[in-house]
Image: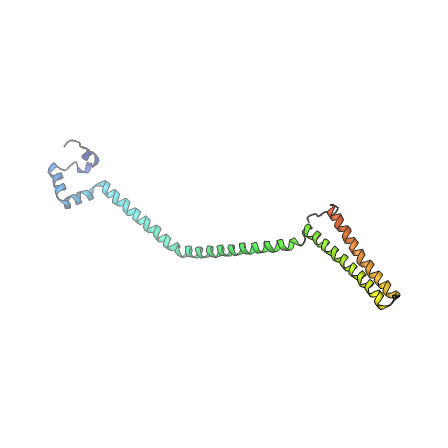
Length: 181
């Protein structure tokens, strides 16, 4: 028989006669028996079987890891939720820290000093007004001890006022420095 593309591709069929080849085409059972005896088909089935077994082994491995995977997934979710909670808490703590540090901010402290200076001035002026208004109503001559007490209190209030005023002026002129640490 002459070499044909069929015979080149499937040398196992080279021994068959033309009538045998026609019978193969006409008889499905004969075709199946010849087809399944071909080396390429056997190799294909062997490869398919090996792939099936490999897939089965991978599936068994995956199934054996499934419980641990679910545990890890749960642990990861818990860790993620915990991290989100801590992130939220961090933001709250940062806000609280800013609020606490604001009380020590130089501009805030200067503002408090100015308010305290004004309050000190008001207190000393109120004391002076109270003393002056009480003088004519009680007697023409104030008791010396009342005058001494007024002077002592008034001087103390004014001393604090003037100290605060000087500190504020120095601060405003840049003579007070704030260093970190």
